[in-house]
Length: 165
Image (tube, rainbow, N blue to C red; front, top):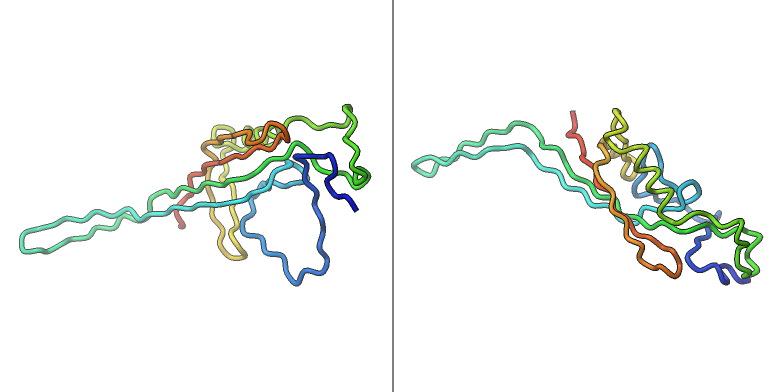
């Protein structure tokens, strides 16, 4: 069976009902999904820091003043596809011109424009694993069309992460 055929740059979602468990590293609320946005999150980086001041005195004494936590930074990295493979297109025939989707970056740009902090008052909820829930604001998006022939695009989204209460 041919899965991708001539559909370069497209992605297929293959359900695996034999899996013992599904591991979801990160999820967003509102979500970015392969079905809705033709994008997947591939990497996450998180940086957090306390807000502290150190005062050095004579005699090698150090006073430490802690003022809570600073706002954190998170970067979500992802890949966007120009389209999804249809089950009916497994024969390897190219998709007809009138059924082709828009460029790979349009859905993720639209998601960013709807949820960036200049448009949205409430923070986005980020769930890492099962128990870690962070809240933050979408600050920036950078997109790079990494393969013009297939239409694949890589993107990075920067979020300001609120300190825990």
